[in-house]
Amino acid sequence: MNIPTLLQHLYRRRPTDSTSSGHGDLPMPATQARTPPQPPKPAAERLPTGPVHVAGIDRQDLKQAIIMHLEWCVLFNEHLGADKSLPPPQQDLPGERASGLGQWLTLARQRPPAQHPYFGELLQEHQRFHELANQALGLARIGRMDAASTLLNTDFERSRARVLEILRAIQKSAG
Image (cartoon, rainbow, N blue to C red):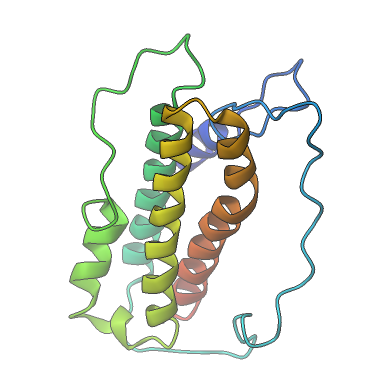
């Protein structure tokens, strides 16, 4: 699956439903407004803007890690099961360590990416991302779609974007 197709799956919206969250098409309750834009992160939480270079990091390897993360997000959307017109997913949803990115992170500990100053933050954010995904799935399974939608549109979305941001920052520093 190519990146534009993955992104289309991740951000699909119903054309007639402006309240759709874009995450598995879970509807947001009409009484709940969209989360307002968040203020900029404190300086300590933002990635430095100066050049960081770590020798031996392969840009293509990082591209693969990004694709694996996006593919997991598509599979996650399918597991939410909000679109009943689609057949149920044929494969299990891999957990943090079994996901493609989780396996990549395990292997990367012994390679140059682990030397990057953002690698520790990537490990932590990836773990947090999966914890939030499990919470959202748990809420959806017990019929709390309102709470699942709120979580998906706030903390989960920020964590998903943060994982990508860190991966891209590491990729940018590759020589």
